[in-house]
Image (cartoon, rainbow, N blue to C red; front, side, top):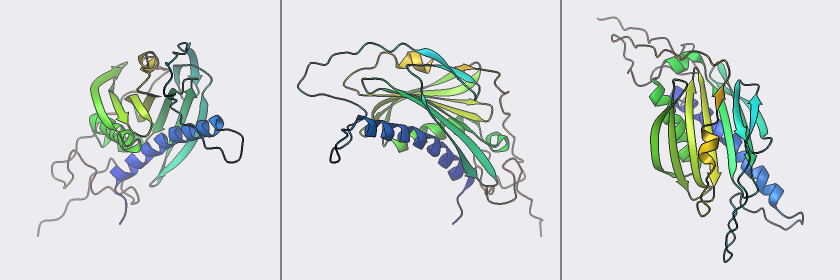
Length: 248
C-alpha cells in the first residue's frame, strides 16, 4: 500500500527528530568507559543517594547557522544535515545539538518542505503533526501546551514527560515552508532553569513570507483538512486539486 502524503510529511519530521536522537546516542558512547565491556551511561545523569550539586548555569553564546537563523547555544553544537526523499521532491533537514555537563541537551532542527505541500494544509495541522511526531518519538505524554508566535509566524510551545529521555520542553515554528523544532531535554529530578532562555533565543535572518494556505475547490472530492488523493509518488502536485468526475 503506498504511503499517503501526510505520512510522508510526518516521516520527514521524524527523520529530523532522529538526527537529535543520534546526537544523544553519540553522547552516550562518549560518556561510556573506554574498556571493552563497559556500557554507555544515560544522557540524563542521576546519581542516587547523593545530595545533588547544581552545576553552574550555562552561558549561552549566539550561534549563527547558514540556514538563516541565530540561536543561543551553551557550546559549539554538533551539526548533522540530511536530505530526505519526499515523492519527487527532497526535504532538507538539519539538526544542531549541544550537551552540558549535567546531561541537558539543547537542540534545534529544521525541515524545509515543498511550498505547495505546506500550502495544502493549515499551519495548525502542520504544527500539530510536528508536535505529535516528537511525542511519539520519545514515547511521552504532553503535560502542557500553548500557541505561540515568532515574528508573526505561528508556533506551538509544549512540555513532554518521557520515560525514555526524561523531561522535554519544546517549541515548533512554521516559517514559510520550514518547520523549526527546538528542544531542551533534561532530568526531571533536576529542574532546568535555562530552558526558556534557550527556547526564546531564536532569531530569524531574512525569513521568507508566510505560505498562504490554498483554498480547496468545493466541487472536488478533497477535504479541506486533508491531502487525500494526492499521493506524493504520483504526478499530482500537493497544491493541485483532484480531477472532477463527469456526471453520467
